[in-house]
Image (cartoon, rainbow, N blue to C red; front, top):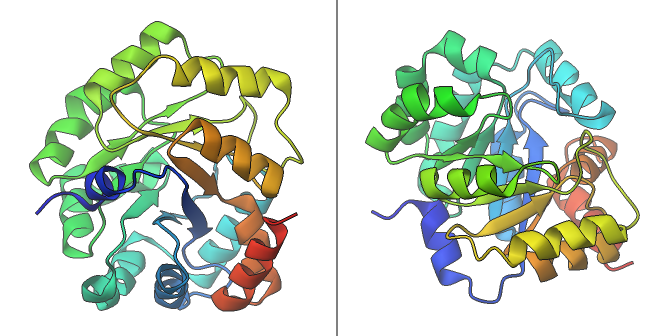
Length: 260
């Protein structure tokens, strides 16, 4: 079986992928399975499932608030894996867990990877994982379970570092659109567009997805024109919250916003 992340990019030659992020357990504890299945039904290519954490450094107020709500609701890794297992056989698109190192270490790297496989997860994004620890501790275990560890790059990441990441990872590279925290933006300025073009010209081995700040037609188009696709987080989290967890309603409103 080919990893679903690799399979997605191998089969998507048109480069217009849309991936969405939501925080597991928010706004409701038991909504995770329904949100995932609804996204799949509505044509979302890949889903990032957020693991709530009390100190999410890279996240803006919207995702921080969702994480706080999820923790209050009682969401944790054990509960999340149990929920994902119930829909494992119905999920055909890649699921990527996004979370900070602390809860994963607490759970145990080996146990975490094993639970990922048992619940149909294809990869993970750990924003605060030092690259040396990734290479020496996490990657050997993840490789054994055929899981992809996705690394992030920003406009500040050096070309040498980007090449190094490209050589030592698989799946895709998460291009953060700016060096700031997550949140929506109305447009990408010339500086960001230049960054997109610069990375594009590097002809990296891995496909790239652009995230952080995508919330309308302009930012979506800029991301999809300069990478394999776009990742939307804060905008969807806001809409899901406003819809009281109704993913269909949230997606209707998201698609409407992305046309403007």
